[in-house]
Length: 505
Image: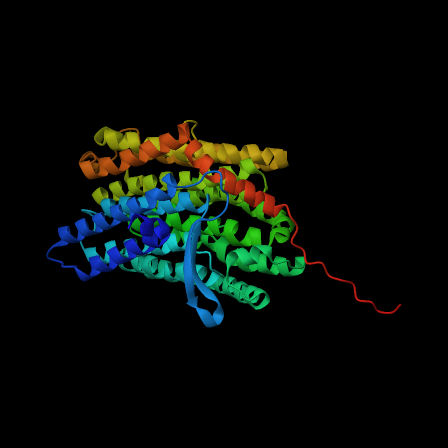
């Protein structure tokens, strides 16, 4: 039994939360919501537990795919159920399964309508997202990628705010349209190689013109998901309308799917195009870092401010990718995991206030620290981490990317470092107006501090933010071999050698 589990650990990680979600749906009873909540919690904890061996049994010296498993799925099209994970995928799988526990606990007393459907949506979505991070067959990856839209669509559309219909349709159309071009790229590669295996695509040589088209097809899907400027406008709307759990998963996991997919598909499949278009990618990344940070500075809605902050921070991730050095790439990986913790915590903090006052507007608050001192301490810590305070995880990834950028071009690093100024400006400006000063109104005066459930969630996230900030080595050790191998692959040209035609002259 132990051997069977070890050989199929990724399948357990994918299908256990999906089956738990289905079980929660079948046992739903509006008269017994606590039973539903406990089943969802047990399912999410069990799903996280089965992913822990991915870390404990991981070979840190091996940069290739580990825990591989598979069988033939659709023989006529050579489509396989093929799974595997490397040093880039495993941290994101762990982040996904851990975040699901946080979302379930955060919704414990908050969601009172259709509890089973809400919990099941997140459990099923968790499994599908892990499927995206694990798939080594292009069609299997595509199925997980598209299927994951459905539970998120439902979460925003059913439990969202007033304009939830507009936000869900915009979210769905943006992500679906980009994904169709990605499917076209997969079909072209299948036509040329006769395979949907991702590893086969890594070895397939192509002329630069074809690589550029393949890269742009992938870019259409992944840039929307990250999201990069100028295809970012769906994210603030989705965050504002989504319930707290939806915002947490969107920020912590969904955005990372785009970043991961650049490293898994666009860059290794079309490495010459990635180098050729690196100037464009770096420019878009720097615009996101600087311009979107300025947009965040003028927001009046706390959720919208954090959403724009996420876009700015994800600009650091793509900048780290396309400077093509170890510091930049490892820094981008640290930034993705760190942002998962910090953005989750900040959206949960907004959720705590919204549950009490039912407003996300900054002007509705003031002097919250007077009535909620424990909550204010956590919120200010996460705000400082979001600003890149040394000693927190928010500093490590950004600092590594800036160090990597300065090795390539001083001005890249100079512009990227503006985020430390603008990040502090928009985050601390919000903190000052919400938490400090005199008690603004009767609603704030009546606020009750954190309950045990809220305290537990924020305390765990605070420990993770501080732990990764002080000691990032467990994460960087895991990613190091894979990053080295990826950079080695990216440095080798895959240009197809075209033999000149003898014209007789």
